[in-house]
Every structure is written in C-alpha cells, then in structure tokens.
Length: 192
Image (cartoon, rainbow, N blue to C red; front, side):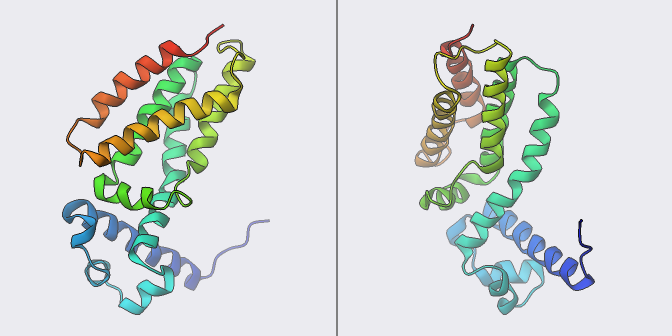
C-alpha cells in the first residue's frame, strides 16, 4: 500500500529537486570549479544550511542528481524501445545513454567519474541487460557470449567513450562518435 506524503515531505522533495536542478544548470553554464555552494543556494532560493540538510557536499549533490535522473531517462528509453528488433534496441539504448551523460557536461562527468564506486549504470544498466537477455531468448543474439559478458562489452565501450570525451575536455562531437562506435560494436556482436 502506498502511503500519502505529507505537505512537509512533498515540500522537502520539491526543495531537493530545485537544488539539484539549479546546481546542474549553473555547473553546465559555468563549470564545476566556478560554482560554489553559495551560488547554488542563491539560485535555488535556499539557505546554505538547507543545502547541507540534503547534501553533505557539492560533489555529493552532483552525484545524487546524476543517479536520480536515471529514472526519467530509463522511462524515455523504454518508450523508445517498443517494437524494435534487438540490434536497434541496443543502438537506441547506447545513443540515449551517451546523450544522458553528455547532458551533465565534461566537468559534471569528471565529478561523477572521480568516484567509481558511486558511478554505476543503475536502472539504465538493467535496461541494457534486459535487452540482451530478451534478444538471446528470441534468438536474435547468439549465446556464444553470456548476457553478462555482452553487457560488460557494450557498457565498457560506452564508458570508455565518455571517459575519452572528458579527457579531451569535450573537443569532439560525442553524438557523432557514439554513432560510429555503436555501429562498429553491433557489427561485432555474435548474432544467430
């Protein structure tokens, strides 16, 4: 049974979301190092103490924002995947995964990547695993590699591309490169 939230709980969720939204916008526009907690608080209309009620630090705020946005992106990806063949689903997933990460900007991703224990694919990773398993069950993908092996192969390529984009400070068109990568990757997958 789902419990109704109190007005205070709803307000707390709204405040936390507003802080995350304003922080992401400021960091995207000015760079992570050029945005202070005070800047975030001013933009979101909250006191500094309120910020620290929700987030221990600026980097924790950013990682939390990264993780919470996965639900929205996962829903969008699931919608786009309806009635497509497995290889198209993998391509759609890969390009959306890259776009989702690109939206956090180079500085933002550097923060997320700085603590690999906090960086995980979460719900998005579950979607890719499901696509692979479903493709194997339908006979569209070979079982020569296990679903886990195929997942690691694909997600490692996506993370590697994002890492390279960060190292180069975003000096190449990430979407164009992602399209080339996934096209090559798909051609190398064992297909039945």
